[in-house]
Image (cartoon, rainbow, N blue to C red; front, side, top):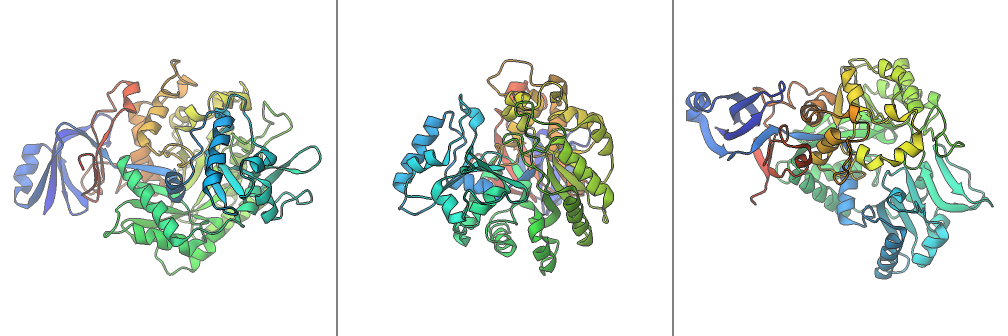
Length: 531
């Protein structure tokens, strides 16, 4: 017995502009599409439920191709510093939060961004000491490739003037060699190791909060990277198993496996596909950092800091060894690479150790892509995992970082598509908003909503259809599910995102104003705006 969906605009995304009058889904899959009359006559005896879309617009289920579900949940349940527009506001907030906490408790926060401050201020540890004199403090930057720590936190971590930079990280120091409290990439891990571990209850709350929020945004699934943190592989995966199932919450999570726990995954008795809602994916590797903290690895120095070229998390040889390890585990790789030199090293490693299965490798972010690297990425076993919301977030300050000569090759999504590269769309939440409509808007407009110009690098704008494809067919292609997900067609999974307006035909500024009517997973309504 199945469900008939009708009386709306139903985009199949099989080809641009294609719509059908109705969809019949039986069980977890789409059985047929076509006219309402034909489907009613053909399946009338087995139609158990009819869903009148009442003029709404149905798409294949939107899937975020790159996010951090636990991190997004943490943003929802703990201190969010992303909305502050001045150092004074952030400082006042931290002082108030410190007064609420018992002395000795850690003061943790996420999302600060000095580019939102007029003076671009980065707090010194001594300033943090004044704000919270009785608490160790660790504050992650919006990019999560830089953190701030006060003196108590540094002391607990054993970081002092004599502490050497860890591999893939930098302890920023003053003119006397003393740590300032500003920690780049893996340097922050020295402090994170002494932060009290997350409890099972805390992680369960974070995952539940995140998934409920994702469902309300119209997302039916997400490719997430969480397993190398929060107490280890077994602890994290058990929380996902508790939350995502038929009894609790339905949401299709594809789990990337951080290279530090890939051995734990290999030793685990769990199958690759645990359930319809939970499966393992590629080995995740970080190759460099981010533009914001000037840790993205560039082939030439930063325009606004000529003595800095970024941070290589791993040497070229070490990166190759990690890719080799993935191949020995029969796994594809998913490599975080933002700078052009990082991308070059990553492509060298993949060439040295090509895929050994049909699963696709993915380049995550591809922030700066030189023309010669575009050519090198033209291979069927590779997908580019892009985050459209980086454009309004990173411009115009990114122009300062890279300079006018390189900026045409930064976040150049249209160039990638025009060169035949397969791209998937994600948010990198909690770093950016998880709302896919914001991502689609960013891909089409390439500017902030309040800005009136034609967009940053307007030649790189995507059409609405191309933008929606990122979150449907693109995300499916990234995990070799293009014959099962990302389209509304017979044999595909019955995952749908239903909106109150047609974002393929709407004015650009109206895309982000769309509201989610239903989020449907495996033919089951998991979110309804009416409830």
